[in-house]
Image 1 (spheres, rainbow, N blue to C red):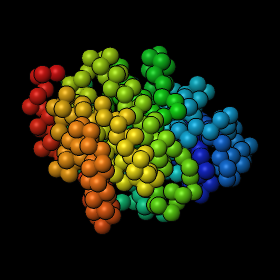
Image 2 (cartoon, rainbow, N blue to C red; image 1 turned 135 degrees about the vertical axis):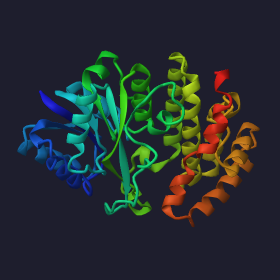
Image 3 (cartoon, rainbow, N blue to C red; image 1 turned 90 degrees about the vertical axis):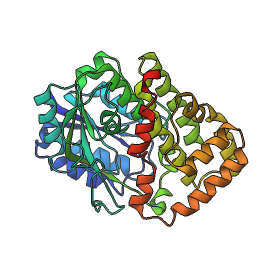
Length: 365
């Protein structure tokens, strides 16, 4: 048995794939202790050829292909789980990379804590792999701690939706039959929150174990991945995924915690909609109509939007004044093009004051 199975969904990633693979080979835990499962989603570049070359050279590498392109990583990740021979599961995207001690750090943490899964810090990088100045989670504010479904001051913020800055105990995942959603974006947010609601043994460690590449607009044209393009299909899928996440929280009787998760999701999704350059005005209207239920939750759950501009847009959506909502979106989008990347990134996150306002209504849920 391998110590870790790392699953990598791949789609048109020839420009980045070797950097990821080399970062896995250099892991201090020992490359031979890692099973690497690469799942190609019908790439049209050299990605599959590169994967096959890795698999031919290393017996711990598996290269497989999906029969039909989905543009979404859920099916590939589920395939990795089904083939996993490792005690623990990790996931990486094909255009990102790992620090050399990532696997060793996460492996020792989950072994030491006997946890169901471990969440670590991570850091953004530029297109060329240059690390940003600071990691995502504030090193002074967030030290190692055990997460709790009743903790609304730290746990909800640390529980980000990505599966990539985490390590999961395989038998915990399989015994609860937890799977990624397939065919829609936010498949990992569903998986991670499902794991969290089924577990009482989850820890956060502040060490950076993942490097998340921020792709620029030029490289975005290379890939037609649904998750990356933010097109009509993406928003149709995200609507399905967010409905599934909401229903799963309801089924677990965890709406109080969901309110905080919703605050992050609402802000994140609204800026994805605002920043998208792939939508016509007609498509934008269709999307807002379909997702009106989601924005109505801001009233039902007493969760305000995190900025005044967002509040104005959400109110217009709820009032079904879609044309005016789109006009507001265009104004905000134009302003965001002039902002430094760190400022633009921070705008997508609710601040502490907003979470304090949410907490005032906790007892009602």
